[in-house]
Length: 400
Image 1: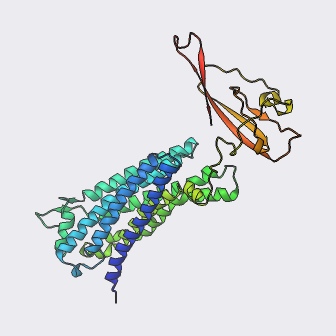
Image 2: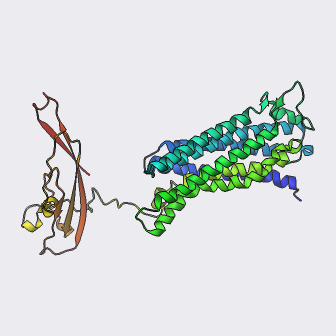
Image 3: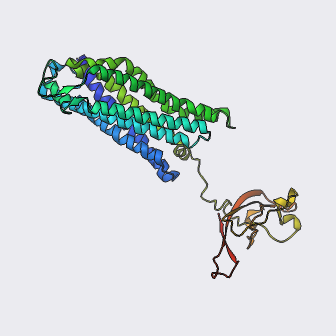
């Protein structure tokens, strides 16, 4: 029959392994989406990869601590096992701080992609600054709490645990507890901020209510981690139980791992919409090329005047603006109507560089109608003197 010690020890290894696996899959899918599907791998993605690397170290150290007795009472362990378990505990504290910092930075940068108001951007910069400041202070406190550093784990070879004169010393544990409370408050505040902000960003957008709620839900997933922070707060006081540290602090280990793991997983899931759309079969028909169905070659020319292209500018009575040769690019959109695809019309050999054209359907032609949208990107550059003659220019046109 499993004892309470066995249950705690097993839970440490299971929680670390489970959430590390979930986070790893989520980050790998994120990298695939951002790097190969949308081809827009950015700083937020790089930050999340760094967060995952530190979280992997955190979870691996947590599993190592569990293998060597974390979750068990001190009298159930040999002195050597207690020392090794405490060394892994120390590595967990350092890795946790960096994983949390990079995770929150990634989420903030991701939200900056959709924020346009100066107030929202300043709020996100503030959250990042507070996250980095609080995380680094907490990390250095945990890193340097004992002198020498190794005394943090070597002192566990003795019982009761005391600062043995001549071997080393540690700062008062009340300071560690107080700073942990402060850090938890900052972490919860930042998580709730990045979780609530999307509501104010999206609620005025013109979209269906269901779509709007879905977008808000996806973008607000980052605040899930704040629940783990809040649940962990009552257990912070167990840091003071040095005589049975590995048994008493199990709840802190659980919820710290959940905080980082949920933050990384949720922050990565928010970027997977293009992958979901691909899985659901929402893709472009490969038979379509340049906006036209296969077999449709372009715009009708000649014939009756009803079938000739008509500039949109002439339809609304406005004059088209003159092009300057120093303009770099002009986009031309042609909306064309096609009847009887088996007898498709030939493509015109030239296009006006600044007109949007509408081909009106011929009233006497039988067959179904298909409408294709054609965009022409035209680049006009002024050549340097001596290339084509003074004042001359050339035009390059790319049909998309």
